[in-house]
Length: 121
Length: 107
Image 1: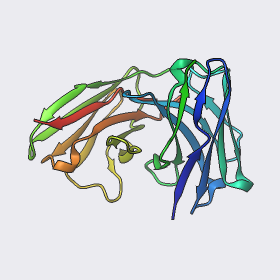
Image 2: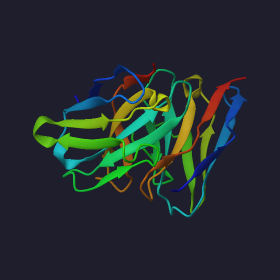
Image 3: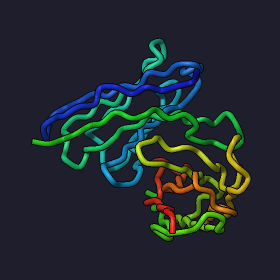
Image 4: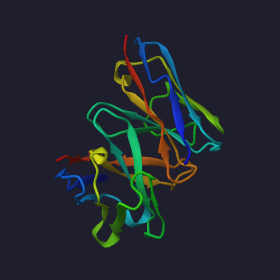
């Protein structure tokens, strides 16, 4: 079964750090770019970061640039998001998703269920 | 960064209604736009990509159109399972950006 499973969320104080992970299975992880998307409680979807299949290209939303680092380990079929200098407005559900450009219609075609990150004193 | 707007932000409709949601980009993005549906407590689900290509398994009552800066998602004959929030996503330029969403609820 093709799936993504996030983990590592939790409660952290402002200024703290957290690393969330995304385990992929059922497909050739190393062939795909991956993306993190977050959703604050009761709010809309927000793009966070992208990483290409070989980690050559990294992109970040302005809101997290300089504080978050995306990475992957293709040998372990895993995606990571290291979050430093966390702020209360980083609170939300963090989804990983597969960016599929293999067809003529690129799409975020596989999503995980999300992991909750709460930043509060 | 490219800014995305959606209208309306919410709407109430009845089963069987035709519903149209509009998404506008702050600059031209060709047809590099997707539509996603999200139900409460669930991950988003892809509906349309490349502005008008319906994803496999998505009912044909959904359709997308547009290019450049203005795009629409139309649901022809709203069904009970369609009550959800709909987001557009531009993937023309990094960082990608989502629209703020349109919540469709039951009248």
